[in-house]
Image 1 (cartoon, helix red, strand yellow):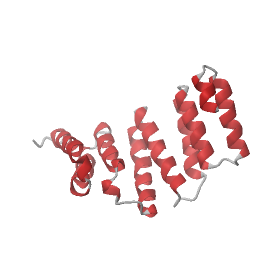
Image 2 (cartoon, one colour):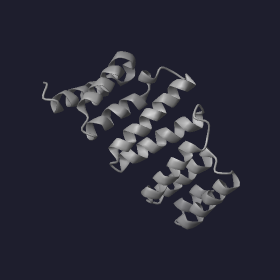
Image 3 (spheres, helix red, strand yellow):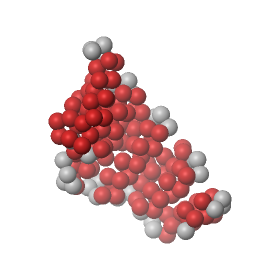
Image 4 (cartoon, helix red, strand yellow):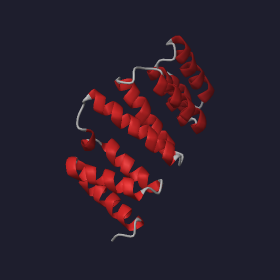
Amino acid sequence: MARQWIESGQPSRGIAQLEATVLEKASSSGALRDLAWGLWWVERQNDAVAQMQKATLSDNADSIASYLAWRDLGLMQASIHRFEESLEALEKATLAEEKLAVAPPAAKPLLLARAEISLYANKPKQALALALGVIEFGKEAIPQALVVAAEARALQGQV
């Protein structure tokens, strides 16, 4: 319902509903993530990031909720050019993903996202290492990983 309020041009009602859900659910990670994304939709990015940071602290570190909160936090931070913080959050998401044993992390898009953000953070060595990891283990992402690797090498002066 909150999303419907936001989409119908009544963002304050939608946000109020999301905030009430956070209070009702004792600051659960899911409720905090919903609130963060609601704030993001109404272009309150800094507030959204603050709520997503709370979501990373609210559940068991080995849970899927923890993985989702760290992943979403990293993506939000990258979107507002907070690349260093984004890389830290996405690294924590990768660690949480490994604990869940869902699939090899190198086969996941998260590793490629970290490689691309490393370029924006002017960390070509890190970008290259991550891109090579994608190439080695994540066949479906090889084309984009090759682009990242080429850009990282160019930044390092290696052609």
